[in-house]
Amino acid sequence: MNDWTPIAKEYDPLKAGSIDGTDEEPHDRAILRAMLARYVPNKGVVGDPQLTLFVARLSQETTEEKLKEFFSRYGDIQRIRLVRDIITGFSKGYAFIEYKQENAIKKAYRDGKKLVIDQHEIFVDYELERMLKGWIPRRLGGGFGGKKESGQLRFGGRDRPFRKPINLPVYPINARAEGHLDKRHRSRSRERPQEWREKKTDFFQDRGIEGRRHDRSHNRHKQTEERHYKAERSREQERGEKPKRRKDNKRDRSRERDFNK
Image (tube, rainbow, N blue to C red):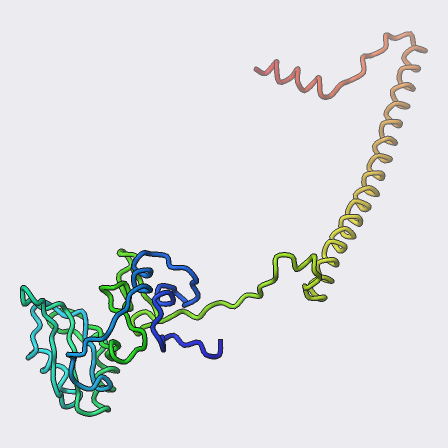
């Protein structure tokens, strides 16, 4: 993690296709195509790559004159190359601007991002074709950025930097059998079930005491009712009266409900 950076120092198609640069297998065909590609930068391109700025997401109507008007505010421009289709001559939406001074390209890199030209919010970055080792262009499955709906997202650039990976402790599958787990972790795993068993035992013991108390009080109440009933019945027999039927509160309530219906 000490050498981790959000911007790639060397282009790797497999890492560029991962959100944090930790993938080990390609997840789309474009990454596989980029891994198998042998790309050589265009030797016909002239100019100093360290002073060249990459400008993308341009409008089809944006011309070299318009780019010079906007980017000359940052410093003196050596040359501008607007990339066009070789057959139709229409703009492909990106260009390269070479400055004369180093401080000029730094200002353009810092302040040129999200600049609006012809109702288009542009994107600027340093030239990567001749500066980044192992660079693979977008047409071969490489590049940076991309659109989410296309599914071909590439990370490690200014537009989509790598997200910092989350480091979690990794234990071997048979760590418990081999005894590689931390002693503190093992002691905690033993203590927690023991604590739960003790709490469970205390809980049921308390419930058992309360239940026995409730049973004893209920039995005493029943015995008292039984004694009162027998004494009342014996008095009625001495008087020669017909013994009354024992009341059943639940049955009486059900009869009352049926009568009310």
